Length: 239
Image 1 (spheres, rainbow, N blue to C red):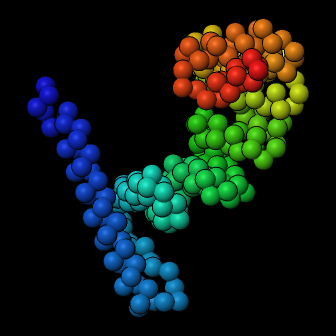
Image 2 (cartoon, helix red, strand yellow):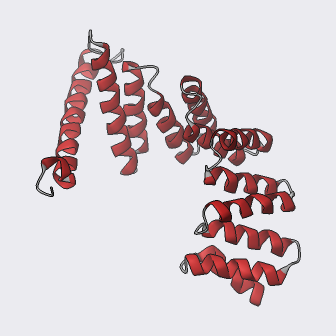
């Protein structure tokens, strides 16, 4: 029923954003008052007896942080995520979001601490482990990255991005044949994954197999004709 308010996504989203905006404005106002009255101390968290109410506050501040992050206001986003954790110190989404935000700011050690805290709370959440694996790869901790990606695949054999990134790590280690094996797995699990075809082409080109590399670059472009990386690779190969 298209007229049902439950199906009216636009109205629902606008209403939700209005509520969060009001919460944000109220919190900012309280913060300004507290900064005047207690300039040497941080604002106290209101005493809320209900555990569910604490969780709801954490969810609301986490959502406000996400809205700020989407707008590029990363420092303000961090404030809201930290505020969420004051209400619920075990609210793992805020730790994960802090990790993502710190990564965007280039503060990788802080990001790593946040991912590890989130994973300690919810060790079975694979997206958090994937983020941590990506960070380890970015920091050059390749063995740690491999361990995280391998554990994800063990728990969820259809987690395509873990295979792709594991291939990237093996390529960085110079293990091109092993990298190619994982890229091939991606093409089987997700035939429309143009990155896997491009990465296969890159590995084959590094091995001197120009003809096969060309085929994979062309395959990537058939899936996504605007993929600039594959365009550049193919053009370089033909020149």
